[in-house]
Length: 424
Ligand SMILES: *[C@@H]1O[C@H](CO)[C@@H](O)[C@H](O)[C@H]1NC(C)=O
Ligand SMILES: *[C@@H]1O[C@H](CO)[C@@H](O)[C@H](O)[C@H]1NC(C)=O
Ligand SMILES: *[C@@H]1O[C@H](CO)[C@@H](O)[C@H](O)[C@H]1NC(C)=O
Image (cartoon, rainbow, N blue to C red; front, side):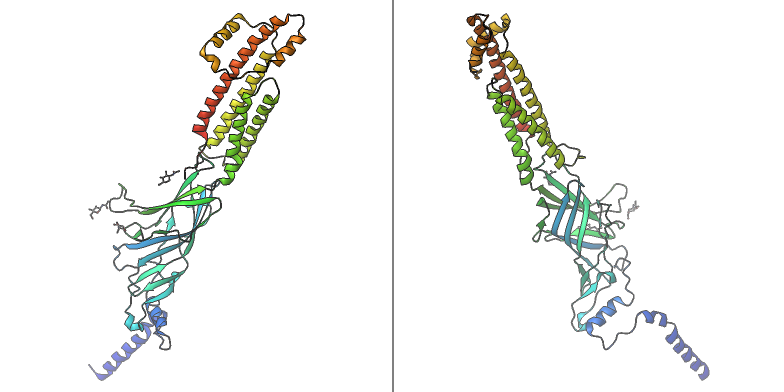
C-alpha cells in the first residue's frame, strides 16, 4: 500500500468519523464538564437512546411489575348519578432496566428526580370509569429513581367510577363501591399490576365526603385468567369502599315522624267514636302519610331498582289509616241506628258477653249519647230504645276492639319488616 493510499484511508476515516456519526451525536452531545454531577447523570441516563414509549425491559418476555398503593384523601359519592369519585395519592413503583448507574461514577449520587414525561410510566386504567368525564390514564408528576433503577411516582389522581346504588334500607343504607384498575392494552405478562406488600391502602389522611362515611376498604387482585387464552392473564386490582350514608338528617325528617304518625293512628283507635277527635286525628294522620310519601319521594333516586322499605312502610300504613277512617265512619253510623238490631246480632252479643271474649272488648263507650237518642225519639218507650241501641253499641265495641287488635298486629308486622335499622 502506497503512502498516498494510506493518507487517503486516514483522510476517509477522518471524514467518516466526523460526518457519519454526527447525526446521532447531535441528539446526544458530550457531557458538559461545567455541569454538576447530577446534570451529567441525568444526561447520561435520559439523553442518549432512552425511549419513554416502550416498556423498560431488555428482554421483551420480562414483565414489568408495577406496585400500587392508594393513599385515600377524599371520596365523594353521588347516589343520584350513581358515581363515586376517589381522590388519592397513588404510589406506583417499578423497575426500569435502563435507569441504572454506579453511584461512584457520579460523586456518590444514589437517587435523582426526573419528570414523568421523560421516562416510561405505566398507564393504569379504571375499567368501570364514568365515561362521561375524560380521565387520562397517564401521569404527570416528578418521580424518584434510585441507582438500581427503581422508579417511584406518587401522582395525585382523581378517579370517577360507576357504582350501583342500593336503597332498600334508606336512609340507613350502606353502599359498596368497587373500582377496577388494570392495564388497558397490556397483558399481565407485559405489565403486572400488584399491590404493595405493606399497607396497600392508606386511610390515615382520609376525609369523608359530603353525606357519606367511609367504614371499610377492601382490596383484591383478580388474576384474570380466562379459558380462551391459557398463556395470557389480564389481572385487575379491585378496590371496594364501603360507604355509609350519614343518616341523622333523613332519619329525623322521615323515620321518626313516620313512627309518630303510626302512634297517632293507633291511639285514635282507642278514642270514643262519639266525639270527632278520633276522626280528626285519623284525618291528620292520613295527611301526614301524604306528606312523608312526598318527602321521601323527593329525596330518593327515582330510577333505583329497589324501593326503600320505608316507602313501603308509609304506603301500607296509609292503607291501614284509610281503613281505620272507614271503620270509624261505619261505627259512627252504628251508634246512631234507631232500628232494632237483627236477632242474630243480639244473640251474638249475648254469646260475647258470656264467653271469655268479653275481656277482649275493652272500649267502654260513654252511654250519654244513648240517653240523647232516647230523648229525641220520645214516641218509643225509653226502655225499648236503650235495648235497641245497646245491641248496636255492643257490636260497635266489639268491632272496634277487633280493628284495634288487627291494626296492632299489622303494624307489628310492618315495623318488623319495613322499618330500616341502623346496622353499623
Ligand atoms: C359490602 O361488601 C362487604 C364485604 O365485601 C360485604 O360483607 C357486605 O355485605 C357488602 N354490603 C352490601 C350492602 O352489599
Ligand atoms: C404478577 O404478580 C403476581 C403477584 O404479585 C404473581 O402471582 C404473578 O405470577 C405475576 N404475574 C406474572 C405474569 O409475572
Ligand atoms: C401456550 O404455551 C404453550 C407452551 O409454551 C404452547 O404449547 C401453547 O401452544 C400456547 N398456547 C397458546 C394458545 O398460545
